[in-house]
Picture 1 (cartoon, helix red, strand yellow):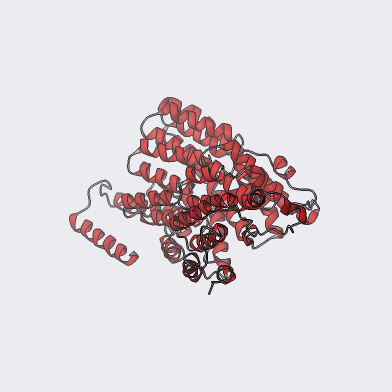
Picture 2 (cartoon, helix red, strand yellow):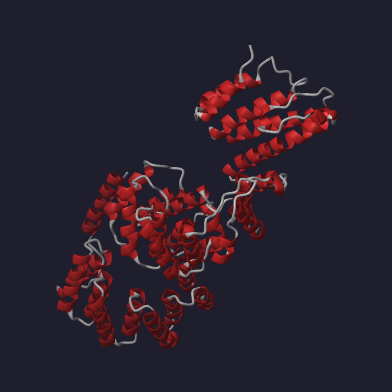
Length: 570
């Protein structure tokens, strides 16, 4: 008795892939299907088995099975008998009397071409899942552009982009949007590849057509998609302010949209709006506690705020959700940075191994290499991030890395690159100032850049703190105090209090220093700089040298505490 193919199809439709795979093994080994007289039936059975293996993520076996089916299709045109059309064609065309007067071989070839293309697409999808990009591309290039459907065009675009063939990627992403304007990942990709909002919106089909392409309504009801395009193009061109404005408008219409909230939080994290970013990440987690996207960015912010209890919980949650995501290993790297930087580096590298296009993995790797006094390697990591998408953090990392091994010329070039890419960014101006401040002869230039950054963005604390440090280096402690106190009138920030405390401590104004360290800890009890500064100040106030080495017994206690904390974490 023959096994009906509709049974394995039903199993696939119901996502019972293991059962489908087992049933498929019976189907392809059935003695009732003769491979010599009915190769098309044999091929059809193999495709069904291949589909089951693909869904079970047994990609190697799926590739082998799909290729076997193609071998049987090659036999079909050699048949002299007129075979009945396979259900694999999924075609609604009805046969006419004239069609049977044509060569049966030509007819079979005509109907099997789309099937061959579909099988090639499946093989390419398997290779893509195995990160075998070049092999996948070879398979996809065997499918004519006119024969590609939406899925095929999108995969082709990703393959071209991953192999740095930008022109081909742009062409395929554009074709995706011509077929359907709601392919969001194509919109994001085109924005990142330099397309303008006007260009992207012009691709949206105006009316339905015979190919079944989606109709795009340009009325108010669909204006949100245009705003979304504009937001992504702003972010891609480093116009963070414009992007945030568009995202804010979208959030008015979609207030609990986790994707828009995450995009907003990511941009806020990049430009240093730490508190706002943390608030949006926490809102996302309250809506969907199992979301993984951008959670490594959230982990970095928690580390910045020294909020290790929340960071620990976040990593614990991520580990229980999905261990195949790169964000999980970046978050692990962030958590381990304080305890064991080499172990943290291995986690950052693991994230890149999982997804070599994951930018936070490169940023984290670069920061760790800098901390481990390996600035040359850090440059490579930050360059890796830039090749994927240049943003403020990769420029900052490059400048810091070059300065760490006295490559001032290269650091200045990277800073000017950032200023050119982000002409209205106070952060980019500060980067140029940082390079000039690295040597005593450039401090006057640095001062001008810091002041320009503060004029452009009066609320930019990074520039204020850098300018205050410059005043201290030049012996203008009074100017530093005046600047920081002016800032405190407008912003309540623990880092300002810490900097003021350090300046007062350096001038032996211990009571004022103590007051500001205490203020910093009231704002942020986890501020490590404030804790260490307060310990140092207390020694100074007792007349003890704060730089003297600790007693051995104290070190042993600290080590024991660290081991206990590590055990609790594990």
